[in-house]
Image: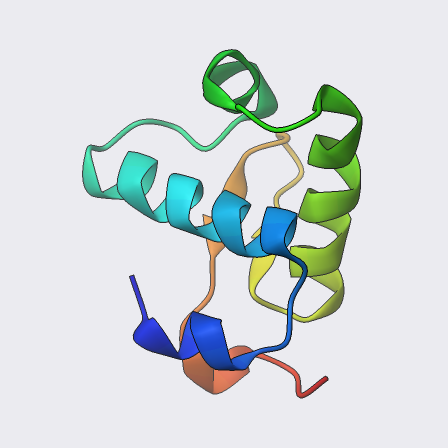
Length: 79
């Protein structure tokens, strides 16, 4: 987890999603929606927009197979 995530001005949900994805990645769990949904404790309707917010800022990206990957902070886009 990169502590700079807290300086990005993201929504609470997007920040929470980053933290969740980071923890899953550290455990070697594939970052796919099906793995995230059961442990997402915010309103389920916020999950998709939170992924979109991370993608828009270059913090995470989805590959052709549907898995998400966290990018290093050097690739993040400013707000």
